[in-house]
Length: 216
Image 1 (spheres, rainbow, N blue to C red):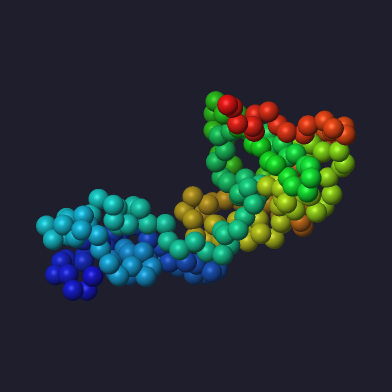
Image 2 (spheres, rainbow, N blue to C red):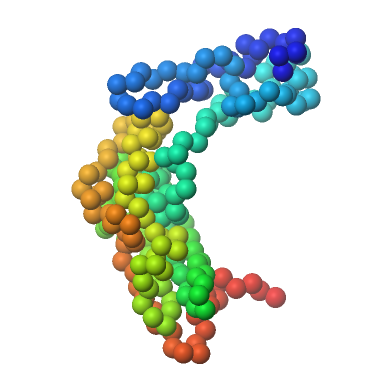
């Protein structure tokens, strides 16, 4: 890239990037220089053609496509943990997990809501979560803690807190968010955040969910 004789200021943009903040005392500031992906040292022919003509490439990160490096606070979350930190919700969900022969099969059914819900307080309380999420467990025996760990409904309180703390510091849409300590305390340190409906299956009875099976 350094060998290209182009105007690299074409890849600089205002209000696109943001330096990571580690505390509320850190100022909000942008990254210096061209807006590039970390480690990027090559340019495709399409972008090169644009730069040579003095135009900003359509698919360059400078065109409001920059999201930055994904921090550890936002990695490795379960599906339910992602629900706990989402600021906007536009559906309701029923999750069914079937147990049998040493494996679990999960199936999620989404129902669209006519008006999307924007939350100003997170994480959701247990009552709020119950309005948008239901968990049904199918099996011959009641689910154990080990079973719950293997489901997409498993939640770790500290992981939820770490994610919300980072988002409040670094995501402009979360800047005014209120983090509820009471709702956090209500979450299990490690477990299922909402009630579980157990449907016992009798011996020889299939616990497969029809909606999760392929249609020939």
